[in-house]
Length: 318
Length: 318
Image (cartoon, rainbow over all chains, first blue to last red; front, side):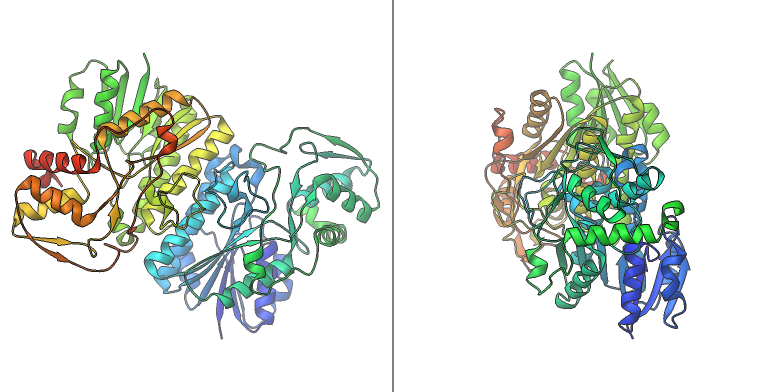
């Protein structure tokens, strides 16, 4: 029985993955410091006989190494995902994204584990000039601490693949949506509208073009890629073949929540320093393996807004 | 009077830069832990009234921050440059290249310094498919701990430019040669031939194609670029418009040292895991600013071999 290790396994993506892997018949160890993870996301998993939970931080190398014993593959999803606030505490991205990835790789090496999947980001393309942006786009320039720290994580994984014979699966995600979604624009808008459904403030001019992907489609792609490409460095963009404007997404959210707020805009092309005004990834590499998303962006946004409405405890949980 | 701060300022490139900056009328503070730096390289500088020397490590954040007070620009050259041995101690590259760069950037931020030059490497292109390789080559895959840690440093600098208004000058060097050169293939070959001039062992098959640049040409380019591009992210490849085979370089070294060793080869396309079999950078971006190297590769190799012969203390110093 394959034993999978998931850092950040109590988070949105990690807990959804844990459920999938258990359902597939794997043994699963979730490692999470619960800084943003939620025990409630693990409700399904916790009763399962093949499920193990470790409360731990990726900066605690010894505990991380011990916890990984007996596993055959690692999904490294733990991260600081607060893209907007990187400039308030630059050390946080460095520690939680770059150093944490190093610690995970070293723990793997000590345990003789050689297969690692990594949640990277489309933000590593900075502000690209090619759209949709392919994996081998021109060498980008970083515009945020978050993306810089994720790129450093990618680079470490690549060096471990070359140097120690690891198989590395690097997924450059667009924003992921769906059940258990707990941070990002749909969350922020839902929170604002929960407090006052008559008004909504939007960061930037609302014309930013963004891409989203539904969590189960994301997991389909991750699992497929790891099955199809058994070794070396494997990099995949993950997103749908479309994008939407922020104002379009706002409309879908408002329809779902049945509200008609007065919109205001903070202005400017970018919502914050380091925000990329246009994210649209070329996903033909993963599509060539036979993957196709089941939900489009509109469906994913609406489903997420409904989920948050029905799980308003989440708005209070952070 | 501009006050420049040089990390790694007792090293090959750093000490040569210190001499240039003092001669140009700048005040210079050299910060070095003397792990590979040499007091003798600073013989010219130490007597100069505008020269300051701090024995310190880039991992000592407080000392680094205090030492930088009163400076207007930073040349961040301190690094672990032992490319070949990254897999023996992966933490070393992480700490001395990535964390050190973060510490330098934070020290700058605390001191209100916003201009930083960074010694990066052509190795960040991994094993490129485009030759000569331009700065905006396809998004590369890292093949060594050294290059991964340098790429992480580049990414941090870029994020600081976007987020904090820094001006960053990132130089992707080929191997630098010339006076005070103290590690690399000419050094290794000279050392072998000093012990036994009748034989020489070459890592790989000797057919690796490599690029080299003379130290004074390198410094010309660095100083020109910083003058010409006063802000934002500025990335420059630095090399000559040619490359040479390792066996060709061996011939030049042997001619200079007047030896005729029997050659042996360890075999394989790469000298070690992570060695790039072909390095040839497109330097048209720096050339467009009016820069042109004065020495070609042959002249640089021969001058370096002569320098080492006349400074055999260096062979013992490490």
